[in-house]
Image (cartoon, rainbow, N blue to C red; front, side):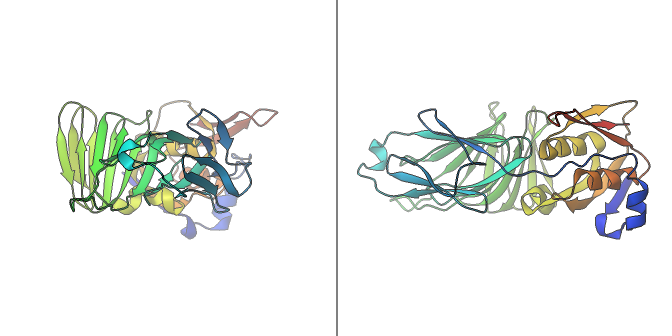
Amino acid sequence: FSFYFVFEKISNKEILSKAQSIKKEILPGGNKAVLTLSDGSKINLDSTVNGEVAAQSGINIYKTNDGQLIYKIVSSSEPENKRELLYNTISTPNGGQYQINLPDGTRVWLNAASSLRYPIGFNDKERTIQLTGEAYFEVAKIIMPDGSLKPFKVISENQTVEVLGTHFNINAYTDEPFVRTTLLEGKVSVSTSLHDQKILSPGQQSVVKDQIDVKNVDAREEVAWKNGLFRFNSQNIASIMRQIARWYDVEVIYKGNITEETFSGSISKYANVTEVLQMLELTGFVHFIIEESSTDTERRVIVM
């Protein structure tokens, strides 16, 4: 059984009737991240002023007012095959997200509780980065001197994704049961350390645990987070609450038996957490209580 909810169709009266059980206001996340440079120094992008934030090896790094980190090549006296690879890491906390524009023109949207390690300048053979958590990629196509396309590789939990120029999403959180790669445009190769390999076409998703399984999906649901939405398609409450915990930076505690019902629907990521929980409560299968410490540094959602 799956309960479908759409926020716009629920009346204000019904929402207010649930408000007594969920009293605390917890605001959604936003553009928050820490940039770690190749020398180990850290830049808190929340508090850093807009404009140039660092310069390394002929590349300037800029922060924009709409939550983007942009790498621009200023000068390069050394050829690519002689250039030392210097790595940066951008990390988002629970309740954070950020967009990165890499020097090759690739755009990356990093979801909450995620990190991306990447060279500030790629070598002449391939482009390789490492991901923990979730990110959406729009990979720039680069033509090599021999006319071939320069490979782009994303290494994450138990898998490597290789592309030439395409749009795709990787969900590789360590607390999720599987690593999911969803293709929106182009073609990608997904491989594991056990030498299993699959080629994805648009609208397909690979699911990796011990082996690679491929299925057809609605890719819009997998990238809804990038577009400011929670979209649930027959998801159980544990899966939904993991997403809520990351975005609203709350601890989730279960009391009693966890319902086996599944839920489908959508709601804005920028709604107060109270509104999201109230939608779930209206199904009659779950009940929530929000607890906060006196300093508001510890926030828990009790699921009953």
